[in-house]
Amino acid sequence: MAGGVGKASALKLAYSSYQKTSRALAAVAYALANNHGLEDELLDIAKGRTTSYLAETAYIPKVAARAWRWAPEMREVASALREASLPTELAEASASVMERWANCRDQSIELGEALAQLHEVPEE
Image (cartoon, rainbow, N blue to C red):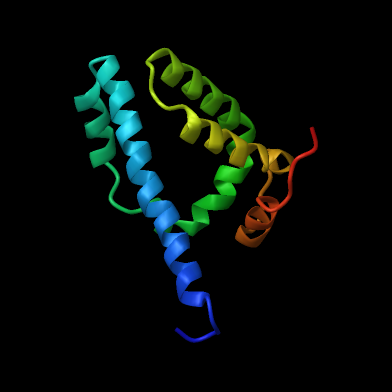
């Protein structure tokens, strides 16, 4: 791969982070739905998706703008998972990512700015 040593490894890790984590997250989501007898309903919602979020980069700034609402929701998801004796770490990690976008509340920003915000650790 052009660009120097480590580029191919970085690309592999970037894609693997999405591919493998999204599959683990899907399993946890189905386990939670199963706890409430809602697997078929979750599958129906999922079948309505025709593309991958990884391919929808224009959506990332929109997520950043809404993250102020979604971070607390992900903390609620973690609580529901804990009550169901399911792993909470993925939901907690999602909340942590979204909390890095706290300064983007309802703003129209560019993709590059949204990605840069992820490198900044929020003040506590």
